[in-house]
Image 1 (tube, rainbow, N blue to C red):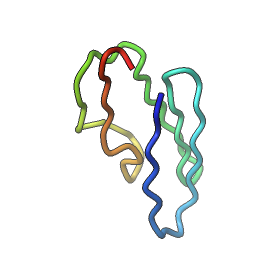
Image 2 (cartoon, rainbow, N blue to C red):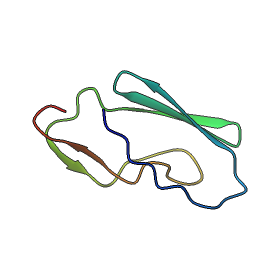
Image 3 (tube, rainbow, N blue to C red):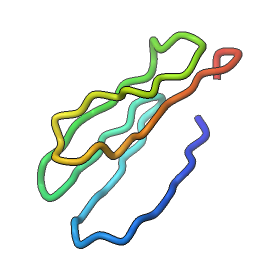
Length: 65
């Protein structure tokens, strides 16, 4: 998995935890897990979340990676 981080100035506290192809994001005490294990090749630009802001703008799988 390749991760591109684009830091932004914010007073919110955010943590990322990586486990295989899953990412758990904790934002101000609330968490959401994003599991990309079964994602087919292509680009996903509408990553749904229950968090107040979307911490993952897009995800892309090319040639199984």
